[in-house]
Image 1 (tube, rainbow over the protein chains, first blue to last red):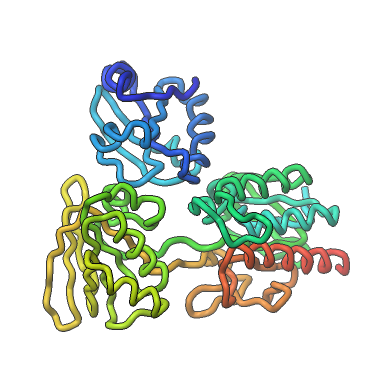
Image 2: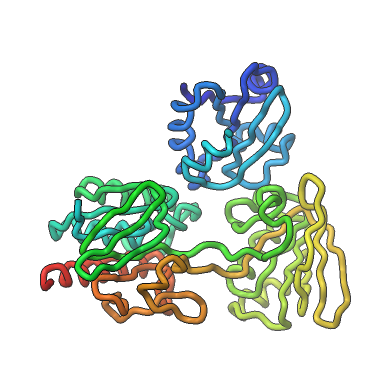
Length: 102
Length: 302
């Protein structure tokens, strides 16, 4: 499953109203660790079809970043039923991401 | 299978060693705990590497990785838990298995030193950061504190003074180890307050960091309301798993000679985890070349 790009416009429908858990990857183009993490998230998305994976660019979506108090990137936020249930910051190996998803 | 050389760590030092070893026709396995690139990927712009006037750390790391791959270096993303020496062969043990080689280059680099405060891990990304260049922009018009007294702390404070409303610089002594010129520049900034002879003793938070408790050497305690706390208290070399085979100094750096040889024949060190004066990108890659050359000689003579 591919990682979907999410903006303020489709955040509600893709994330908050999603019927499955959503892993939101807050990132920026200038952030090296984010660029390093992106292919790992992509790989995990292939293995975990029960989760929706979305990518949010914090420079383009500064309101979403502000709303969720993002203060360090990359930041992975896990949503269930429209609520944040957990978050993980920084570049991590694939096994950590799989553990994080439970 | 028995590799000629196992390289532990895929940062600039390790990947450069891989390039040199492959060009000498040695089989190479690079074992990396996280992802290739190491610390340099946190640097948005490298401007002091010869022949590359301006390149991002990510692009630099990707270029070196692609170069090493194209030359035939094999990469596995597994954390080495233990290194064993049976004389003729060395065995690197990971969660998934064991890998053997005749020589090993340890190029594991270093990690951020933590403050050692309760709640620190939970609040990382919720107000606590170890990289002002990465996360400073999130604190526009906010109040932040920097902890530390070296050049990194001073430069972080100076950078944050441009972004944030107010910056506290908390340091346990009354003088700084960093450059005098940077100290003077900091002192001239109206929105920077030096909190000297003091250390952070507690983090107060609900969902994110709200304030820090600071205790001075005279026993007085202050609470500083901050939105962010940037820790710049040095780095820790990642040599702990290999102390059975290499000599470590008091700070944990690996002892080696000019050729990056350690006390164990066939075990070499390269990069920031090695004891040396200058830890820069260019000295990391240089170490990689030197260690690989020494390893190649060891193999050819062995």
